[in-house]
Each structure stands twice: as C-alpha cells, then as structure tokens.
Image (tube, rainbow over all chains, first blue to last red; front, side, top):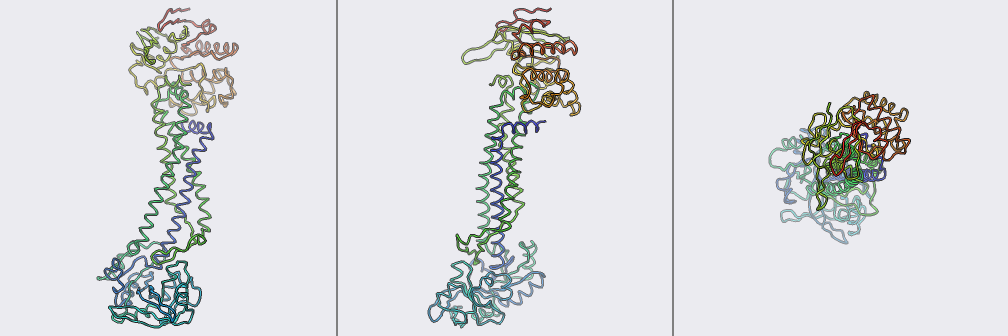
Amino acid sequence: MIFRLAFRNLIRRPVQSFLAAGAVGGSLMILIATTNFQEGAWVNVVRDTVRAAAGHVVVQPLGFQKSKDPELLIPDSAALAGAIASANPGTAVIRRIFVGGMIASPNNSVAVALNGVEPEAEKAVSQIPDKLKEGEWLKADSDGEVIIGVTLAKRLQVSIGDKVVVTSSRKGELQGFPFRVAGTFEVGSAAMDAFFVLATLSAVQNLIPDVTDPATQVAVQVPEFEAPASLLGSVATAAGEGFEVLPWEEALPTLYNTRKLDRVSNAVTLGFLAILSTIGILNVLLMSLFQRTREMGMLQALGMRPSGLTKLLMAEGLLLGVFGAVLGLVLGLAVSFPLVEYGFDYSMMQDATPVSGVALDTHIKGIYSWSHTVVWTAAHLCFAVLAALWPAFRAGRLEAVDSLRAG
Amino acid sequence: MTIVSIKNASRHYQDGEHLVKALRGLDLNLQKGEFTAIMGPSGSGKTTLLNLIGGLDTPTEGSVTVSGEEVSSMSKAQRSDLRRDHVGFIFQSYNLIPVLTARENTEFVLLLQGVGAEERRARAIEILAAVGLAGMEDRRPSELSGGQQQRVAVARAIATKPSIVLADEPTANLDSETKQDLISLMRRMNEEEGVTFLFSTHDPEVIKVARRVVRMRDGDIESDERR
C-alpha cells in the first residue's frame, strides 16, 4: 500500500513528477550514450595502437622504455621470437626495429623515423598497408624498398620507383643505403605522413652491422582485445633474463594514462550531471511535503507512525528514480544504437590524431558497455534515494497536531 | 467501563509573547458506548481536548488515559499505535486520502494494523455497505459528494472497531439533509455496534441526539449533562 500510495501521489502531480523523472532519465541517457561512445572509441584506439605500435606484451632491451635510446637493441632477435612463440602457441610474435635517420632525394633531405618491420606479420596488424595511396606494400624480399608518407614524398619530390638514400648514425659511424620508393601512404596524421618511413626488418638491420639479427622490440599479440593475465609471466619466462618484459599499459604509458584520465574526467563531469538531475527529485519531494503537510497530519492521526511517513517519501523518491532510470536506460540504449551500429566519422572536423605513433581511425563506433550501463543506472537510483532522504527525514519529524492545522 | 480518563489536564502553548492556556486543569471520564457532544464557543478548548484524547498532542500538566494507557508519557510512535488501535477520527473537512478509493481509504487503518488483504477488503466492503455506500467502493473522494465523503470517513473511523471515535465538527460542512443522514448513521453505529463517539460541535441537531452534553468555556468544563 505504501508504494501504491506513493505511486498515486506522484501521478496526481504529473507535470512535476514527469519533469523530475525526465531529468534523471535525460541525465542517464546522456551518460549511457556518452560512455558507450567513449568506451567504443577507446576500444578502437587501444586495439589499433596496441596492435600497430606495440603488442599485448612487449620484450625490449633493458632501459629502452625509459631512455628510448635507438642504440639499445636485442641481439639474435629471431631466436628470442621463436622461443616466445613456441612457449605461447596461438600468439603472433612480431619483431620491429626503430632507428632515427635522414632520407634524401636529389631534391631534398628530411629527418625521419625509420621503422624496420616484418612485412607479412606487420600487414596483419598495421593500418598503413590499408592506407596506401600508391604502390604496393613491402614483401619479405623487398630489402631495397621503402614505404613513405605522402607528405614526405611531396617534400622529397619523389614518386613510386624513384631512388632515395637512407642514412643512420650508429656509434658515431654513418651508415647509408639506397632504396627505391615502393609505395606511399596517407593515414591522415600530419606527423606520420611527413616523417614515417617503413622498410623491411632485414634492410634496417643492415644499417647496424655490429649486432647480430638486431631488433628493438619483440611484440606478442593475441587475437582477442584483452590478453590473458598469464601471458606476461609466460613471455617473461620464455624471454629469460636481460630484457624488459612489459604489458601494453607500461609499454604505451601515454595511451594508458590518457585513457585513465579521460575516463576519470568523464566520470566526474557526468557524475555532476547525475547529481544535478537528482536535485529535481529533491525539489519535487520537498514541494510535495509542503503542499501535503495537512495530509501528512491526517495520516498520522489515522495511526501511521513517523517512520511510515519517512517510508512514504522514500518510496516516492525511489519510484521517481526507477521511472527516470527506466526512461534513461531505454533512451540511452536507443541513442547508443546508431553510434554502435553505424558509428560517427569526425574526419571532416579534425585530422586523425596520432597516439604512440598510430594514426587513430576517424570513424569511431561505440560499444554497449554493460558494466558502465549498470553502474550508471544503479548510481542514479542511489542518488534518487539519497535525494529523498532529507524530505523523508522532515516528514518523519512532523508533529501531527501542527500538520493538521496547516492550510 | 471507562474508555477515557482525564485528570487535571492543562495545555498551554506560546503564541508569540503570549502564553495561551487552552485547557486549565480539566477532569473528564468517558464510558464505553457513550454518545457525547462537547460544545462551547471558539477558543473554549474543544479541539485541544480531542487532540489530547487522540494522542495528537500531550498535556502540559495532568494525565490523559485512553483504554488504560497513559498518553502523556508515550513516544510519538506509541501514540501513533494508540490511535491506530484504539481511536477513530472524523474531521470537519473529511480528510480522506485523495489518491485512494473509498474502499482503500476504509482499508487504510486496517492495513496499518497488519490485517491481511482479503480480510481488509471484505471488512471495508461490508462497512461501506453499512454506511450506505454499496457500489461506490471504487470511487475516489473527488468523485463523491461531501456527504458521501463524510460517510467514507465514518466507515474509515469505525473499520478497526476502535475504543472511541473522535469527531471534530463532523457535520459543519454538510447540508441539512445530508447532516441528518450522517447523524442517524452515527447514532445507529453507537446503538447497534456499541461504538463510543465524542463530538466537538456547535450543531443543535447533533446536540439534540447526544446522550451526554459537555459544555466548555475558557479551557474548562462549564457543565456536564447526561440525558
């Protein structure tokens, strides 16, 4: 009967009740849709970046993560990669080498980041093979070829088949090799399109004659979005002593911290929105209490205890919260649907933003983040109940004889 | 059997800088089955007296005992329980719960007592029929006339078979025909069901049928006439 009474009390003031529940519903809708879109964006960013710039677990030379010194290298990298692959069946093990250098054409020379990759393995994880404007992706035997960004090609005034020279300094000695431009890419990031050069791992290794089969990074990837917790230990055991073995969160700290900061700032902003929305409930219940003081006195005269009045107001707050939450849940999922199914392309507004050397896709799709949906819905219900506490407490403190005298 | 016993009860309250003495050392006993009218001019203390008997208020001095229980030493919750189990209220302005139907209003105190749904429903329908509202159980107060609303209030007040029904000017807002019906109804409940009624009233029609008339003036009893 308490809930029946509470429900009917709410519908006798339909406009106020609808506005209060609507504020909660609107807030929850924004939270669910925003969070689903944000989490979808982060899934895309993390998946693409982890695959293209690192791995779920990376093995690097000791001290490389902090210093980024290109002279720190893993020797005999194929043997290490083989040991890791056989200890972790089902994973992809990819070697990369990162070298700073200069690229020169007859017309110009530019400082670049030279990445040595295993063409077939890299093709499976990198976005660049899909972003070729001209030419072809590297092959295993393409040691004399490079892929460069379209902006860099323009600066060098070269096109497919033209000759360039890549030079790099190693322990004070300059090494240089000629290459032909096999392809140009455009990922939409000004920095990457102007300064990234890709060549085969073996071709870049030729610039480092004093180390046998060197690599800067051996990356281990699993097909799933998240790697099992055991992967890190298993890779560390297979790699043995003398290496840094890091999960992606440590290998790509900028990405990890940016996601964390984004989630926290989003939660704080949206949390404030949720709290603001529940002020509507507080307002409706306080107004209701003032307008129904005489009725409260009558309920007490009939024998309802002060705690009964408290329960009645709490029930009204809870019901408003439930109506709002249901409304918000339905609207939030409805707004999320096109964001999840079709996504949103912001390329017209902004270039692809590079994160850890990976240009993010400008077409973002949301995901249904059920854990966040449940948490936000529960939070709104809790806020609604909290908003009802003060009016409910005041209702319980009313003196029957004074209430009955109220107009 | 004494239902209400009031001994030397005073009720004073502060109104700004003035101390108002609403009751001044009043003594009164009410027996089971009495049909008593309290009359007196405005400000004589009628409503204050009803509030003390109903446990809505407590005396500044003296004692008020209802069904053997001392009201002034009770907590708010205990006084609520006393009203729920022993006291029925009928107000001048009906004071029905506007969002509940006639049946639900009648059931309400039974619900507070913890009576089961089926028994509540059956008793409410029976009592509504007894007060002449058969077929109107599902109407809300806004769909009933003033007289019908007051009948629902009577039904609600007697549904729990209380020790006493306190009625604060119950006929004040009714036309003469409806008033006569209501007085007859309460008289019948008193004679047939043995319900004890205590009215505060100015209405000569009510006073005419009362078996006991208590006249109040300046917070005390001026006369107490049994018929």
